[in-house]
Structures are given as structure tokens and as C-alpha cells.
Amino acid sequence: MNNKYLNLIQCIFSIILFLLLITVSANSRSRFYELKRSEKIMDTVFTITIYSDLPETAEKAAAKAFSEIKRIESKLDIYNKNSELSKLNKNGTLLSPSRDLFVNIEKSLYYSDLSNGAFDITVQPILDLYKKSFSERNSPPTDEMIIKQLKKVDYKNIKINNNKITIGRGQRLTLGGIAKGYAVEKAVEILKACNIKMALVDAGGNIRALGKKPDGVWNIAIRDPRNKNNYITIIPLENNAVSTSGDYERFFNPDKKFHHIINPKTGYSAIELISATIVADNAFDADAASTTVFVLGKTKGMGLIESLPNVEGLIITKERDICRSSGFKESKQ
Ligand code: ADP
Ligand code: MG
Image 1: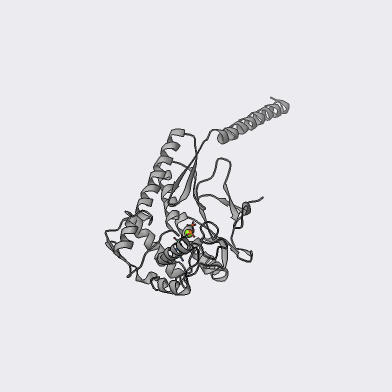
Image 2: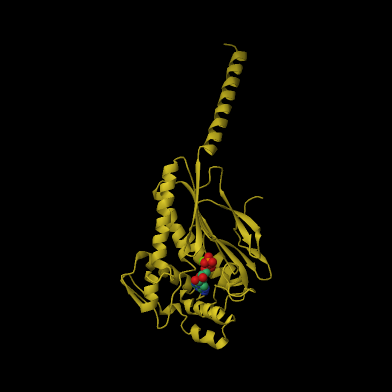
């Protein structure tokens, strides 16, 4: 066979290969079924998105993941009077705590030590005081009232081992700054066990990606804390998590001076930042760290982020300075 024919055959093969590749890549994008479900649990909206080539598997996996989130809510929610956490708050002691309660308190204490008490789950009496004061008198509590409740705030009075948890006199715990991240992480574990490879679980800004989307990484918009129709940036997620704490979701008065994230040293809401976003390898740590950094403020907060391996962050001060940690990744826009 002469060279001319060889070239022609080679050329035909290349064209066939090219066409085959195009078809395969088009199919890999379109053959996935997209499932998106939302449910209101733990006082927020949980949304699960799954891409799978098996619709039934995806449906079953999502149902199991939602059951897991509800199971966790039934243990850790203080608005449910029968939850384990409510019982601990009421009785001051709890025998044979579940693994869920144990690991949440254990990790909370880790972040308390790490932040010199900026993260402190004993702040619930202060939140109860705000709630009472604004609902009954539509005005903030007095300094005296705050000082009185502040005496109950100190994570060092929590004693924990596998058999028993005790809290100090008059103390009440809240896991609002950490438990949603835990539930997101546990939901992802369930999805993995159901053989799901591409999913996103979002609990009101506590977001965890499992793998990628069929067409690439997950792109997550970080909301402008003062304009919900605007975003600050977009970040890529792939097998990791992002969590944002802000003063804009839950507040007691319109100027947001009294909102749901408390500085345990003062008894007043933390006001140096208006939002703190943390990217970490899992949602449990991202959630706890974002609340911690929100309380710590710009300098100490950024210092903490830089000191933690595999943790990045973006924080916005009330003067609207936007600060990014050294390895903070953004999607090309
Ligand atoms: P969100 O719950 O809106 O996602 P966060 O993750 O920042 O926001 O958690 C805020 C919740 O954390 C509060 O509602 C309260 O239950 C709890 N919390 C408030 N201040 C502190 C604090 N200093 N340390 C630990 N938890 C806190
Ligand atoms: Mg948090």
C-alpha cells in the first residue's frame, strides 16, 4: 500500500475517533438525572441536589439523607422539648449521651479552646434574654440584665465523657452554630453509602459538595450580606464545604445590633463583621469555624484561618472591607 492510501486511512480513523469522543462527552453530560429536593428542618431549609444515572437510587438516597437530618434534629434541637439537648439543659446532667450529642459538644469545646472562648455554646441564656426583651418590651435588655445572664456563660463548666455530660448551674447550651454543619456532613455520608458520587447538600449557607457536577465543579455564590440580590464572589467546590455566618439572617432589631451571634466576653452581639465565610474539607468544621471567626473579628479571625491547615476564608467588616485568606480560591467569572 502506498503512503497516499495510508494517510487517507489514518485520516478517516481520526475523524471517526473524533466523532466518537464528541458523542461520549455529550452523553456523559445528558445521561444524568438531576434530583433536587428541599425540606424545612432545624429551623432552616435543607436542599439536596443529586446527579445520578439511576433515578430510583437518587430518590432513595435523598429520602434516607432527609431521615438522617430529621433524626439529628430530634436529638440536638433545643426547640424540641424532648430532644436530648433539651433534657440536658433542663436537668443539668445527662447519662449515656448519644454519639451525635457527644461529638457536637466535643467539637464545640475544641473550637472554644482554639478561640480562647469566642465560640461558646453556653450563650443560650443571653439569646433567651434578647428574645424575651424584644418580644415583651420591644426594646433591648439593660446592661444589668445582660451582666446577670453573662454569669452563666462559660464553656469550662461543661464536663463531658462517654457516659455522662454535666453543665454548670443555670447553664443552657445551644448547638445552633455547629449542628447544621454536622447534619449536612452526616447527610453526605448517607449519600455516599448509597453509592451517590455527585451531590450538593445545602442547609441555609452550610454547603457540602460530594464530588463534582457532570459538567465540572460546583460554583457557589457568596451572598452580599447587605443585598440579597447581589453576590460578592463565586467559589468552586469539589468534595469540600463552605459555611457563612452573618448578622443578616436572624436579628432582633432592624439595625442588626442585636442578632443571633453573641460575643461571650461581653454578652452583646458580635458587631465587628457582617459576614464570615469559611471553606474547609467538611461541613461540620466549616460551620463551627464560621461562627468562631465571626465572633473573633477581622485580625484575630483571619489569624485563626491562616493558622488552620486546609481552611480558607473571606470576611467582610461592617465598614465593608473584604478580606481574603492567602489561599482563598474563586471561580473565574
Ligand atoms: P446560622 O445558624 O444562621 O447558620 P451560625 O452558624 O453562625 O449561623 O450560628 C449561629 C448560632 O450559633 C446562633 O443562633 C446560636 O445558636 C449559636 N451561637 C451564637 N453565638 C455563639 C457563640 N459565640 N459560640 C457558639 N455558638 C453561638
Ligand atoms: Mg456556624
